[in-house]
Image (cartoon, rainbow, N blue to C red; front, side, top):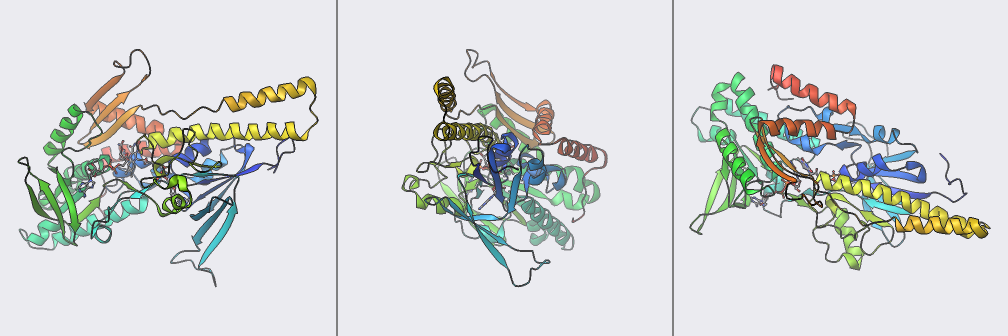
Length: 479
Ligand code: FAD
Ligand code: NAD
């Protein structure tokens, strides 16, 4: 690929950190011939997170929800270089990035080298590193719980769940240890916690009950939520419907219950009673899934300490209306690693990615026009035309505007809830909102997610997974 534009102007280097919703959305929409594009991420694939809660139970196979970054890059018009590495430091003053990567794996070793560190120069940098699960520093959480953020987390949950079942089966019926092992506690009644708990209860009712009815009878799932309601981002009717459905399914809902400490067998929570009084409750568990939302990654914390404009960036990077990092002229940030008025969702990150791809294309054209005006001997009408084009391009840079299309969540037993809206700005805005829950919504949920998947391959794989489960049920073996 040429290192320069047709005008002779050297192409700028655009480095994009991450292969999540935001970064992949940039890659999918950017004219990659305009830059030397480099993607850096420790994960060489995009993960379709909305279907991740379906993975531990085997409703959806891991391979069906991932898309290799190289195959996304291959479909773009220009060359894209990918480095499997983690950005560990950003020198914003000198436009340099430090990448670190452990070479090989436990099985594959490289003689004499363990870790490599590379310095990369950039002209433009996009930070799309997402967030990490937040434990709020609560003692015992990191050592004893599973989170649900990556494919590896899903595998770990599956392994622990199966360990609990098979170990409990060897213990005498009625023993407290057996009951403990068969109890799954999910902390956090946001969409991650609710969707996972619902999938697990379906698995117990539809599959484990078929093959191991005695064990299924004793299994229990509890959601522990700090606020008075699960799915608090939904409207009150959908919250009530969610509560009712979860309880009907047999999931225990402990609301107004804030976990303060975790040991290897118990979750210790403070429960606020309707009287206003608070009591301590110890909940025994076999599997503990921690789903209390997002925390900030180290690279984001490090970057924010380097720029005075980011000194208040405790919950994510601060960006202006153009997604540019406050305090920088050539670093952009998007998605869960930023703190904006928009929620940390895939929907937001994806729209920001589309917006940034168009902004970056405009910046490349502005840069090229400025180069031509400065370096060539444009005269008269030709110069005027170039200047006109330049101001038109600059004027086309508009602030980012998020269009909320609604929220969807699976709540178990083939039911989903949806708070949908469209035409937010129009005269009909009050008519453009709809809140629905039930089986029809479940099919809507399914078709919406299939359409959102990145490729025909994953659309076919996910559909086949659902058909497989409908025909044969889910697998109950360890792996
Ligand atoms: P991510 O998608 O998390 O991607 C971050 C990327 O950065 C990853 O590739 C990561 O490997 C990489 N990275 C991390 N550290 C570094 C580093 N130091 N250097 C370079 N790269 C790095 N949202 C919805 O709108 N609808 C849903 O149904 C939905 N369901 C969800 C279900 C689950 C289980 C979870 C966990 C989240 C869900 N979300 C959903 C939220 C959604 O996934 C996030 O908002 C979205 O992933 C944010 O996109 P992002 O690009 O900012 O970050
Ligand atoms: P969240 O922040 O939405 O919910 C976390 C929940 O944990 C909150 O309700 C909070 O009150 C509770 N909590 C926090 N600390 C607690 C404690 N110590 N004890 C008990 N409860 C505690 O987190 P999430 O569900 O992981 O979602 C993260 C983001 O991803 C959100 O923006 C969400 O909208 C998005 N997401 C969306 C979907 C969907 O649309 N279907 C699915 C998953 C995630």
